[in-house]
Picture 1 (spheres, helix red, strand yellow):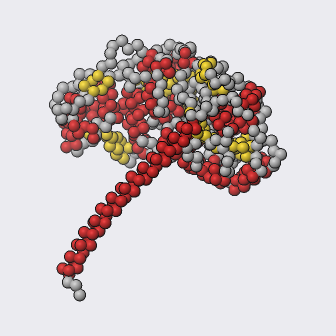
Picture 2 (cartoon, rainbow, N blue to C red; picture 1 turned 90 degrees about the vertical axis):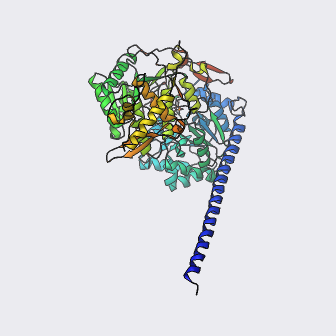
Picture 3 (cartoon, rainbow, N blue to C red; picture 1 turned 90 degrees about the horizontal axis):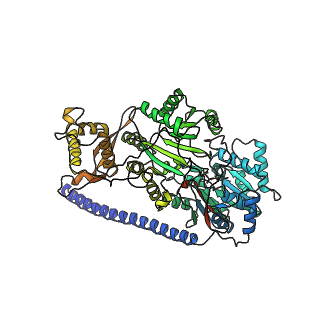
Length: 634
Ligand SMILES: Nc1ncnc2c1ncn2[C@@H]1O[C@H](COP(=O)(O)OP(=O)(O)OP(=O)(O)O)[C@@H](O)[C@H]1O
């Protein structure tokens, strides 16, 4: 029998070997991870090249066998004279049998891209849509045009659902468009087997998927049942899929292609520039009462008799502001997820009917808003990302006429939003900081910041003085604030607080920096020789650039964001440390003067039959009222 010493020696050598194996495994795991990353990146590159090759084809031609019919249907059925940008390309590509994703900004006219082809070819187009209210609107509008369209929802009467399901098996049926929710594909066996019959009879023409970004977890409206749509290409081979969305980030588009099993498909993207929207950042006062005075002036004078939306980031704010404005004699209503569906629907309808001038809402007031004459969207608090901001502000000016997108910005709101973002699984502080960058900017065209977000490049003429930066004549050259000394002071304050076992919020840090608050937290130097409001900009600037980081702490009632020294601050005491911040230029803005109505920007691009692109002003389209906004068809 072995001695204990021998066994212990054996144990040591086994441990040594295990350590070596662990190190080896770690090496292989790292290699495996890298190979996975490389594989994904290669796949994405191949898909992008495939998409780009398809996109390099000129799809906007008028020489296709169906071109004459397309022209006639546009005029006779839809009573429209010309196509808007990329509509004809989308129509020709889907009629050619291509799988495609159409990316157009909100209000650009995506619906026509599948409604018109449905009438040019025999058979049925199935449209997947996430909201019952959107489906009802579309079916109503098509029926008005004498186009045969149906929908099935969980609330449709049994006989109606049955009739529609039978229609799928009926070779002589004349229905051209059928609207369903994604849940129908996932949960109704009868629907799927009847649709299979429709397919084997050769009557399924195409599947259009509206708001296709809902497939992706990276999108802003993820809907789990959209994932199920990936099987469609297997069940219905050769049936073209046409996805439509206003979300353009490459990450989401790649994900959507993967989920739908259409990698490398054609992507038809029109510009995201909305030339008729005027973008403006307005200094937000610290007190709610002062905020109300600004909002009152805007609604009473600048947007007198005009319709709009005020977005807040909490139900409490929405209720307080609506109440405050009502007390000032304004006709506004509140909208948030805690209200009953009936009340929300009533509020929405009355706003459409111009009974309310504005809706004070949380972002629950979102997808499905199709009021063309929204002349202003005011953000009382910043959005949680640029993507969200673009979608929310984009609800203004759908009629192509001038509208204003105003954001009230103040440093304190960063932390209101970051604590919410930190608690939710979907958001990210990186995305929020992009939004903060947009607000802190006072020298670069706001459109250029938005364009960067969508991988686009817009020049001065694309803005045409339709943002506060471009419309302000900047006589003095921009000023840079040297932050070397101030950074050292801020780092010192935070180090000292840590020694005292004290955590500092941004406000407390500002206090200590401006020699206010508890004496033991202050520094020994002089107070900064600039106003505190510029100090707020400095703190925000340091935060979004990694010199400061947020440290979130939970209490029983809330989440608090404290500030800590960030990784970029490590070199602050080195001789070579340099840091400058461009000082914001505040533009003039008349709260009490009627907003301008005319501008070059009030034009929308149109794609004509002969492909030349020209500008044209449109009359506002008819009002459409969305009934139910948020139901999910289950
Ligand atoms: N070629 C066109 N000429 C004039 N008006 C058009 C044209 N195409 C669409 N429209 C009108 O533009 C408006 C917006 O269209 P639609 O609802 O399809 O937009 P959308 O891109 O789907 O927007 P959202 O993303 O908000 O759903 C509608 O009133 C529609 O009638």
